[in-house]
Length: 323
Image (cartoon, rainbow, N blue to C red; front, top):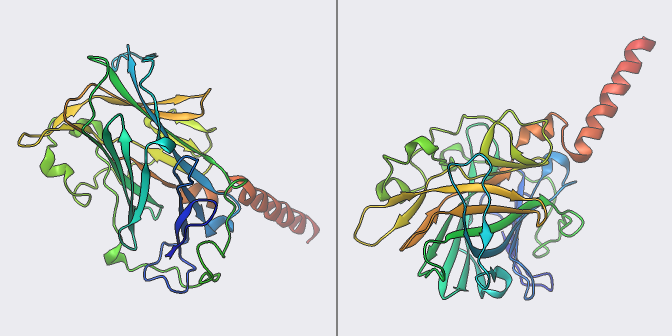
């Protein structure tokens, strides 16, 4: 992993092809940017498509809202004026805490601290990505009873963040060993909504215990980008997927965690993924996941890889007809 701080705001890069890397990322490339006058960005790419596509997780803003009905099939909300905080202006800092973990901490969100703690994970199907916890500590609502909305985005961004083997420093080289010791690979924990009545701080204080939903696959491989039709907690964009089916909690010191409602909505106008949280009075906690669905690449349903698969199929068909 390479650390840098160039004009693009790049902080560091994880790449299986780094000659000095102490860990392999199974072909996944993760780069973290924190430009002086821009939003914090985490990029994901993979050598499965020869780095043709790059996907950005961008941390956008936080604001309060009213009127959201978590039980409605067609909910809406109204943004509370004067409550929006752009995270590019929230004094965010990036720290690489190990070969497989890093944090983005925003220290001025209406006087509160908003922390994103990321960890590289591989699930039982071999998909790689980042599980991360989101905690908001010390927040005071400006409007009583309001909900909180955290806006992020996940979309293809290779025009802005094209893969380069020289990213970070000059230690990158192509096609080194990308194997990973299975015993050291973290399997992601994603809590299902049905767990909320039984899960407390004992279950949410570690990311290694509950892996019961690892094998639950979406049927949305061929769908357009958007909230998955078969899983309202999943957003798909190309071969990238964003999942937020873990339980949200209000964590008060000295008390058991209290489960609170949350929901994932896509704002088409802003191209933002909004997580809406019910009102809370202590520390907010939730643990989403963002990563790549390798099956979409190997099935040829994403970007240039799909063109290669179709060309190979066409050539094979011509060969069969001729011979």
